[in-house]
Image 1 (tube, rainbow, N blue to C red):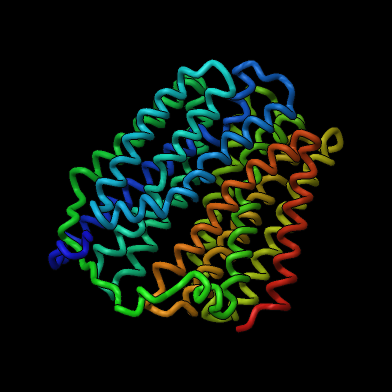
Image 2 (image 1 turned 120 degrees about the vertical axis):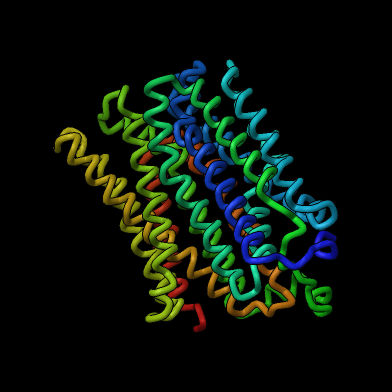
Length: 411
């Protein structure tokens, strides 16, 4: 295992390692969101004219990558333990440079789906980056190191769609995929040149960790409930990818401004999600986890309801008013989901013993990935019948989570 070759890291070395994986995560997540929020528009450019089919192909393409990643991440994790996590991150980023470049030359919707499926076979650098930061930092600085990387992973999607919307308007969606590949290439160079896998504070887990089973993890207080909450939050968070640009166009935005308006809304949602993550610690210092999680879900439900209500305003109000309503909806969705997600991970982490952290957080990550993978599929197929139904489902899911957490969770 890589931990056996680790040497003590001085202050400069571990900080450089954390800076490397933070910058690489930011570049990767920014690059990804340059183009993926506008995938419905790209699918339409490939000759798919029916709105329902566009939503279906988009949902399949967005969902297949995290679905395969959820299945293969344990295997990549074991390889990372054996051969080093740095090379696993480099392997993932190299594949993304190649595949994102290839995306600029596709001619059919199924080509996009095929490339996204291949991406799922090689993805997983996000969770590996968090592990690399955690191993590099001293034990007392590990939460800070993880928090910095996670913040970068949230800020990237906040600025990516805005940059991508502008870029798509200037050079077109096809060339925007080339720009995405360049972002991944920059992240690859940063990890290769700056990260020293020998300069870590990694430590061997206690001998008790080997006896932790999947069943014993599920028995921890509130753990199964937190898995369900994390799945639901991720499900709603990822439901907008296949339908939001189509919804913006449906309610009357000019075709040439759909990418820009959608990009702004995606960026607002991601940025306020980062704020929710940041302020969650202060909320947990004043209120019980049950109230923070339930309250966050309730706020997100209101946001989804407002997003649907913007469509009802079409023809009755001005377009700026509708965009303003959708912006407020995006703020509520971002803040609610961000705070509830962080509080859920914190509540689960509080009941996981030190010897079971790897297993416990691995299970939580699987729940998140399943929500991430299934949401675009469901949103794509449901959106094929009616875009508005997607928002109704989001309201129902968030409202149900708020009620269940408030009544079932044990503080």
